[in-house]
Length: 213
Image (cartoon, rainbow, N blue to C red; front, side, top):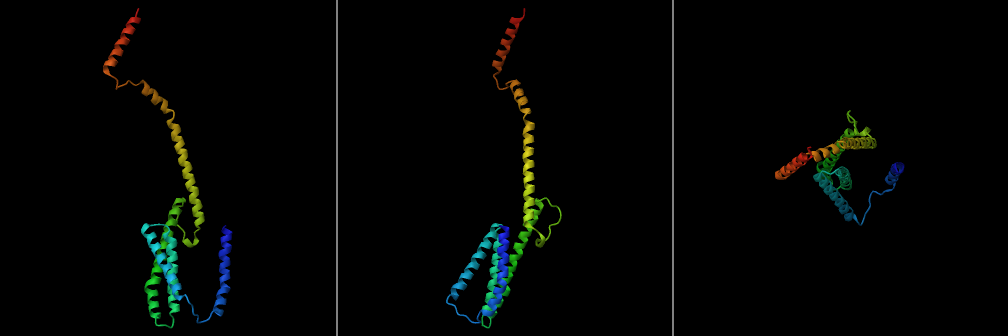
């Protein structure tokens, strides 16, 4: 599965290199479309949905905030790009530049910064659970798969040790149970009636006196 993923992502990268050259040479400078309004309304609708889900994940402190923050930041950068490029040589260029400089790009940078910090904190927790005591390496040189495997091995070892300790504790308690039961059986019944105990004592004395020659 990993090799298939690597083949697909690498092949897509290699395919897009000549595709960009083809588009730069074949696309016209002017093109009219019939669904211009639908294209922008659909894009902005997707952007609003992404921002809403990101905010919900942030309020609920969910780990899903990380991918949604990255998706939202990407959409914000795309929005700024298309606003500026499509408004070039128009009266709306100033508004597009101001919106990109003071709204879209700062928000995208903030989302990426917070997402990176959350990833870093998650890596630190996984690093400590894996049993490492040294400093955590940078994210660019860190393999998440190795940390996950080490953490799983450590957790399995802890579970096995806990099960062993539980069995040893049960075995240590088993010899004491008959002694406690025997001592309970030999102990006098403090809740018995005093008159009944006195009658039993008198009967025992008479029985003992009858046995005396």
